[in-house]
Length: 233
Length: 233
DNA sequence: ATTCTTTGTCGTCAATTGACGACTTATTTT
DNA sequence: AAAATAAGTCGTCAATTGACGACAAAGAAT
Figure (cartoon, rainbow over the protein chains, first blue to last red):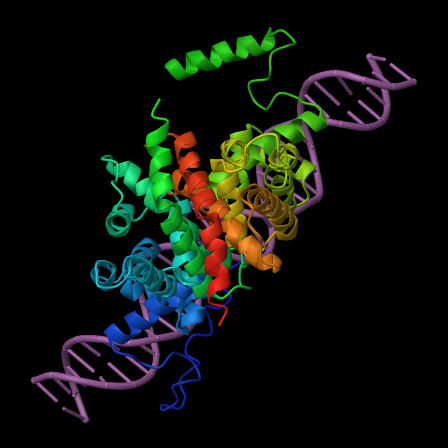
């Protein structure tokens, strides 16, 4: 049993108050779409930092609005999270990458380096990585197939272009091709994880690191394919 | 009807039960050290699956004991988490790796492949990765320096051995050497993350994947060092 | 047996936390 | 100006959740 009914008496005491002041109590009035966008933006940062279990009250504080207001835009916290995920996770891929990566007037090494520098800046950010990892860990894999599909496309383009310029014949199994591409894509993804999640690997300039990974990949490409074909025992 | 009959049966059994039987209500009595070990073991699985915000009541259920009992062994949930971290995260490294990796009577490629197959099985497990990621994400980096130190040692051994067998001269900067080693170590770590966190990359046998990564690294080693020395502009 | 220590549970407290009804205030429409 | 609509807050509820005092029971010691 709790003690309640204390505050029932003081209801109508806020009769006299200045009308113009927006700051004192209550957030500035915003149209629906704007407020919603602001909440989503704040929420993506908030959940990226505090995890998907972050509390709605603290999110509301971060937004500068009352907790109740969140529920004017999103029926439940789950819905809010799903929307954050859609915007921040699924919206972090550029279609132009597929074009640029296949522009054979440019050397593959240059294409790859440009792509990964951009990919690191656009997708593999602190915010994206934290949200993605939190979502992946909380088994509720919100929409993994979509991302997996995009990344798979990327991997196949990378392999096709590398194999073409290097004159290497790829194995017929798609999964083998994917796994090979991951030796590059995974090593750079892990580099981003080190930087943003483990907070390390900040001493060498990013473009130099990318250059190393790409060179490694292109130089080891043929031998790697060989290694795969070798012991099919 | 059935409930009553069950209840009666239960009563009679309790009245005339042998001494060895664990009581129907309440956990079997265990000495302090054993119970503590059992709780820690269950807790590591529990927090790996449910995140560090998992509730003590559910952990207690998983242990088959009352929630209160947890506080007989650990003053706070924080203390329990710290202990889990110490045992499961910090205790997952084998000293023998340092020995085997430097056994120059064995080819580097063989050493690396053996090491990483073992490393994947011993350290980069689902449980370890999930605990480590949860801990890394919840900024409270519990003891990051210790792990960073061990991994750094590993990276240096890997680089020393590869450079020796391949007759390559490494750059003087330690951080550059580390970053180069990460092209291998990171790509394999990310492979484990794909398998255990993203639940992908299960089609190609593990040893084959390791072989690919190692071959790639050793083949691209010299060119990568070159790429690093190239544009020091 | 009697006492004492250790192992374990029950029930509860206070703080959180997602959700929402009722109300207030500002802006727009008629 | 009055009415209608939209934006925003207050206060509260029910379920959780970490923590703990008080008590019960199983072994061990006397």
